[in-house]
Image (cartoon, rainbow, N blue to C red; front, side, top):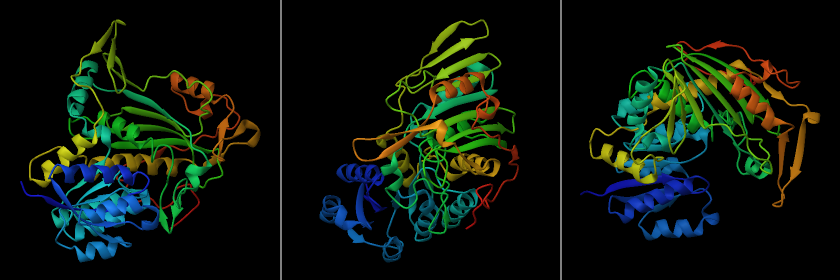
Length: 413
């Protein structure tokens, strides 16, 4: 089999995952690494040495790399900051490469549309790095959910974690609304939690290989850390089929406390509800009978499944990959959240701060475990729960939504 020529832009941070995926493909004889852009080569001597030993030419500027290797690359790996996904992907497509880009696919919906237009123009594909969308059983899982429930009326989920000052200070875009003149809109639902939000949208889609169409978004965004963007958010989304997607996300959990006991995801329909996580699905029917729905080899997608799909497409097989058309729904929801809500600072007397052993600091909301549990179980926004720091957002219609211009961030690019 012909070895495919690959390039990579960035090998630090999460770029390390793409770097090791590429090394595995090289070891299997599937790919050669022709070139790599590493802007911090002095900080990555081992990876740079390995890439050179494999025959890669190193660059400090991705544009120079793509120009030199125009027409010579089969695929370019792009595991960079959110605000860089669109310009880098479009540049790679214009030089004839297919692209595997990290999630979320882009910061704003106009970038998603530009990326897809470039892919169509150059007859190339873009695969988006949502690992859970490449699990082999995904489409079977979705069909089983719809069949068991007789459709979907509601999907709700929590994605809770914590981030400290080191996390937000590690680069120029973490926790930012804008970086270097480009939209970022970093936040708990448009970065780490994007996996969950994206999956919810896909499962709510009526057709097997399609995601939901979004009718409206109502959101509440909050900030506990000294950052530009938010670190707490609730999104109440209505699809065009009137399904409700309710997503609670936060990056201010106190790790010293027991996290609230909330199922990873609840999916409700006419015939009952399903508790869904990465290990099993439990159906409770209308008569309150509980049943485990069997899924063979239930697991998250891994680098192996992702690269199987990407390699299949590169070899012109009709493999299912997660495209910008699908991934763009998460972007619409995230953009809608910033259209709906200002970023509300939570009063200092409602917070507490912790100094960590590594010298960083984190902030948590007082009684947040109790607050999030009540809101989730009662399917309410924080502003409906008599919480002193909560402010309601505005319901925003998203029909034919095609451009984010700043929303309620108070900023422009």
